Length: 56
Image (tube, rainbow, N blue to C red):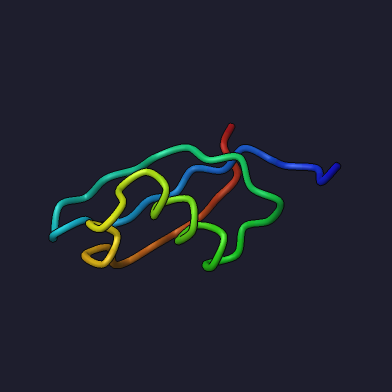
């Protein structure tokens, strides 16, 4: 079993600032983008300015 950590992902979707939480193995940009694709589906193509940090 892979250990996951809760992260907060801050990003812009269509120019609007947003954030979401995700359980991921690490804080990589690829993991964050994959998590956002699961949340937003096809709208994930409009995502920019991704920042990942550990949730408190």
